[in-house]
Length: 441
Image (cartoon, rainbow, N blue to C red; front, side, top):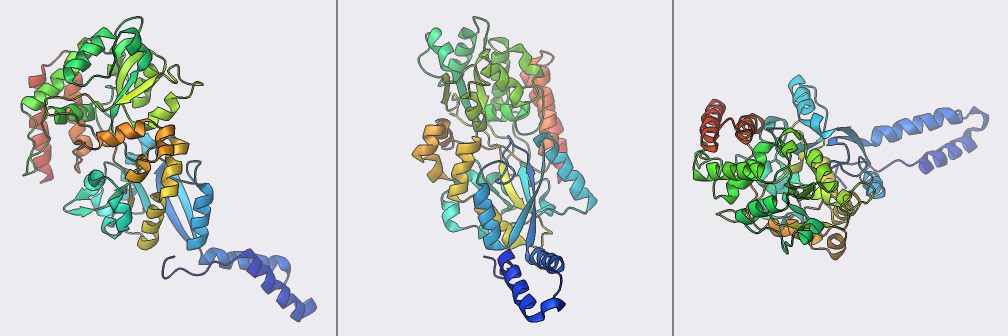
């Protein structure tokens, strides 16, 4: 319990006080309704309210917003004499609503969900990760704090290990005589071409949105790392206009020409591409862990029981991925920083993390739970994601990430549609991103 928290006022105590006063005062006693109203006001006055800004389900929503661990949340509230209130919006609205709210100077949230936006909104959040329980931190992958760290300070806690891995249709593989998932880029290109048959494509992905985590630029960043490249050098300036950057884009072009669902260029969100996969119209895709659970539901999926998972195929430098960067942060202007941190630690507690996985399909961030037999039985991709986490997964988040990915993603789209070569697109992207970084200073 927080040191300065007051003991909770209970309805039973209010009633006992009323009965005692009534016995002493007789007919002169205060009316029941007035006393109950007064007791209710006192109870409310003693309760600390915490406001949480979060996404709506099925995106990574916390207990009380999503339907899991609700009893545990109620117990936490009672123990801390607190009330957690949610302002939840659909995921596509989160960033802009946050930006508008911060710009107004009237933001009232205590705990705030972020997805790759920490460095962009740095002055509106406060560092707190160094105050998290050492046992909790030791149970998280070492890279967990990379996307919430800026200037040597960590401003958040990632609460789900959300890495891109390979999803594939085992029935399609069997019919094509393919016995294992692709291990290399060459395998991936060959499989995509061979699996484009019988009314389905070998590969599908959403290339319709250029920017953000899960936009086409972030997929290129995945391949960039597999090719041995990186976005920025030690001085913070772009360095991706090299052989690795070009090779990464060339792979996307090769896949697109030989085995990719042509509708991919118009699919805006991952759900658009996933629906093609769930309908049995594509054999392979990169996807996020949370889609594993609905893919196994026969009421909405034609591939239930036919889905395989593997780490992403290796490029010249090996396999690599990107992180969905789903994290909890604490507002810079909150009046309850300690209680806000305790709420985040509650969200990251073993019981809540386990129910998050079992009930919603969003994997835990805790290594012990990713290895938990019950979690792995319900979500076999947990072991795959944990294996993928042993390899690089840098999302290259910066304060101007949306602007940078908008530029790169647009050039990638042009290349996939044939209006530019990979080399031309990389040069144009490099010039524009360099200007953006120089402006940032």
